[in-house]
Image (cartoon, rainbow, N blue to C red; front, side, top):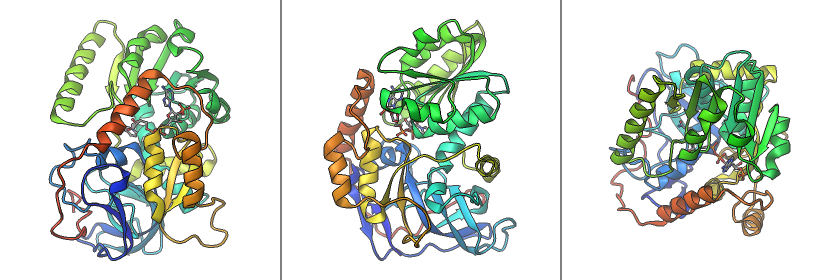
Length: 406
Ligand SMILES: NC(=O)c1ccc[n+]([C@@H]2O[C@H](COP(=O)([O-])OP(=O)(O)OC[C@H]3O[C@@H](n4cnc5c(N)ncnc54)[C@H](OP(=O)(O)O)[C@@H]3O)[C@@H](O)[C@H]2O)c1
């Protein structure tokens, strides 16, 4: 089968399109072989490629097929599967330990797959699982969002923020305030945000101070957000982040530091400091089932920045690293069928044109960015180009799926 692999940690230049990967087989009775039609890139993909997530990659063998999001058709199901049948159109998110979405076939446990929303194409469906699951779990579970609540979403134009604004409105939030830069104000307002704060002009902590919000949901990261939150939260308010204080390698030291600040912040929440939670997305079909209902009711829609053919997957990664994507960067895996969707695939010339125009593959205008974000991005990109020890593969990547329960 065709697929994208990497044989060593590094930047997007490490990604290769390979024609003759072995097709993965069912290894258990609760697995499903999916013919992948589309996948999409998330920041975690290039962080893994760069070796940032080495702690969750322990035991991984190269070469490795990246990407978690999947939309496709079930072509083989294990005897123990009860919900998914051969021929079903499915969407899902692979385990953090396995990935494998950026290839023609992937095997996923049935419990990570749900039927795809009937009103979405595969390209649209592939843009949603990881980011919708993350924001659904962060807002409704960790954040305890209830009807009537007041919510601040930091990064309303980020892929997770785009989901969050819509999920919060659907859950009945009485006020959704979201931050973004000037070029994205109309996009975020169009998603349903009641108040949009242009972070290039104003500080959200100043604008919203004293307004007794119930929840700050941080999709951007940085310790400044945690420091500003008490000014806008009520005494019972919560601060939920998916990005933490800093973007850096997910090493033992990072885990200890996250653990330390978690304990510290939870302790101070006993004495009036906001409740703090760091959320890591959990893939499961039950939440996807609920998200599918929202999509089919028209309450939640995908926003796609660009669609790339598999051969240009590298450019989708570069676009995500650029940090300017307006919605998702999708990779089309199965050839487009006439009339299937309205998205034009990027060609190498169109991608190069927009890359040279904006410094990333996103087509947005040149708004000034927060200096700490720029610094963090620059550090991330520098790290990506650090040469990491390459582990050469002694066998092809057929072992992309090792679910614990199969
Ligand atoms: N813990 C988890 O399970 C989990 C799950 C998903 C994602 N994440 C993390 O969450 C973060 C967001 O992921 P994503 O996929 O949503 O990102 P993304 O779509 O790649 O984010 C890009 C967007 O962020 C906006 N942005 C950049 N700096 C900003 C700032 N200071 N304030 C407001 N908006 C800003 C950009 O808009 P402008 O160009 O207008 O600035 C752009 O629209 C990443 O760090 C990712 O690793 C964690």
